[in-house]
Image 1 (cartoon, rainbow, N blue to C red):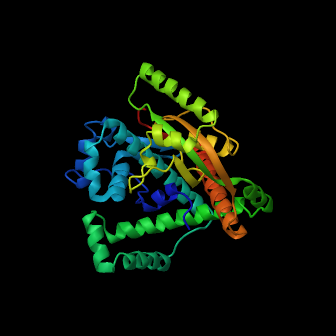
Image 2: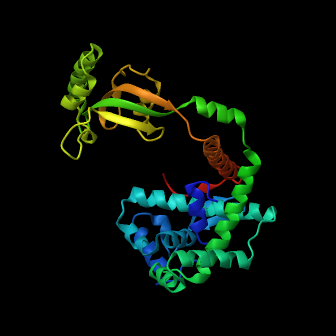
Image 3: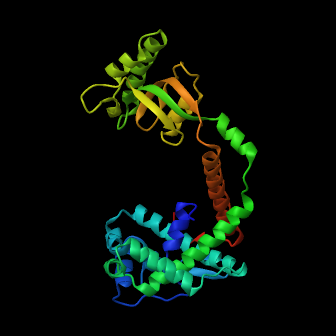
Length: 335
C-alpha cells in the first residue's frame, strides 16, 4: 500500500549506508562534474557533505547516485536546467537520503525486515508487468541500473512502506463522527464564471481591467443574464466548445482541490444563486455565480476509505516531520 508520493520516491531510491565516493570517469562522476559548474558543493573531486543528521552525513556521491537511479538516462539533462532547479532537486534528494536512513533504522528497531522471498516476489511481479524479465532487464540497462541495485531498492522501499503503514494504522482509526461530518460538507460545486486576464500586465493595466470587471459585476448584480455576460466578456478559453458554441462560463460539478484556492473558496462559500465579489488569481480577475452545490452521496464505505487515506497521509507527513526534527536533519546547501 502506498500513502503519499514522497514514500513512493523513497521506495525508488537506492541505499548507500556509507560514503562510497565517486569513481573517476564514471557516469556519476561525469554528471557531478557537470552539475558542479552551477552547484559547487557537488564537485566529485571533493565529495562534500550535502546533508547531515545525528550520527551521520549524506555526501554528494550518494545524492548523485540517487538522482541517477531515479531519473535514469534523463539525469544527464539536469546540467541544462537552471541553477535554482538543480539546487531544489539536490535538496530534495539529500533530505530523502537522510530520511531514508533514519526510517530504515526505525524499521530495524521495530523488527521490520523483508526476506529474500518477498523481494524476489515483488521483483518478479514488476518484471511481469514490464513484459517479462528479458524486457525488464533491457529497461534497467537503458537506465543504467542493475538487478542487484533494483532489488536493494525493493528491500529498502518496501521496508519503509511497511513501517509507514504500521505507523499510520496505529494513529488512524475509523471514526463515525468524521463520516457524519464529511457527509454534511458540500463535495462539488457548479458555477458560471467570467475571467478577465491580467497575466503580464503592470499595475496600471491591471487597474483598467479591474475597472472593467467592476462594470460587469454591477450589471450581473442588477439582474442581467450571467451566462450571456460570460459569453460576451470572459477571456477563459474553457468557455469555447469544440463545435464553436459557448457554454455561458459554466463549470459543472467540480470537486475541492480542482481550482485555484481563491476561486474554490468562493465557489464553496458564496450562497447558491449569489454572485461573488471580484476574485484575483494568477490568471486575472474573476467573478462567479454559484449555480448549485452537492453533498457527498457516495456509499459510506467509499467516503470512509477516502477519509482514512487522507488521515493516514497526514499522519505519515507528521511522522516524517517529527523524525527530521528529532534527528536534526539539515541540508547543507545555500538557499
